[in-house]
Image (tube, rainbow, N blue to C red; front, top):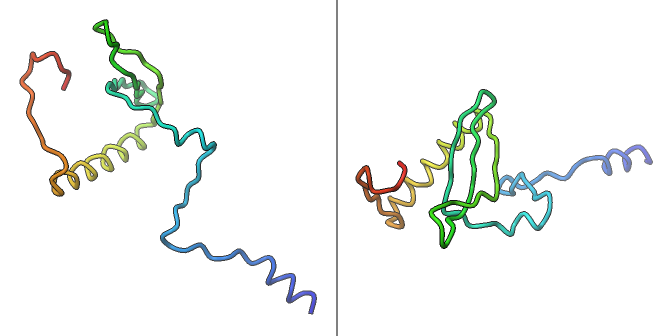
Length: 107
């Protein structure tokens, strides 16, 4: 009888299929920063994403976070972002506007 109870206790409860399979390292991670500037640089180890904000008085950007993504993760992220943007366009929440070269913005 004790063996049966022990086996039942050691079974892990099944996780519902729709439950998220991630958790935050720290609740402070949920307090995200808004960025209006992203620079992407490629290196042999992957792609470096630099996030920042435009400086209110100067023609500069203040970088506050950089993340190095391996190339396979960067490719996956590119696909995910494209799918999200396509859905936003289809839902009418995002409008695509073409910017002419030389307007001061990077494309």
